Image (cartoon, rainbow, N blue to C red):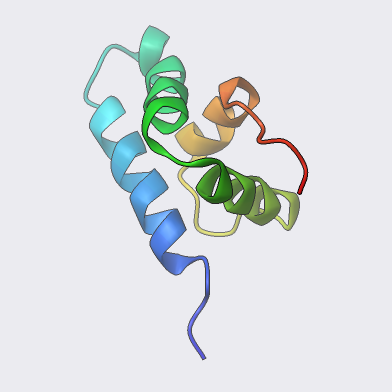
Length: 75
């Protein structure tokens, strides 16, 4: 059985990989801004659930950016 969060982790890591090519000072902010702008609440909710369960496979920059990502309202 494949990991249900694999695509989400892949997408978050792609964003982080791009921002790793930018100045380090704004990289986490850039990841958070991108996710806040383009990810729907359901995707952000799944990201936070994945992080709460250890965040396996996530680029450290995504984990650093998590504190700046808007948490969706509870369902």
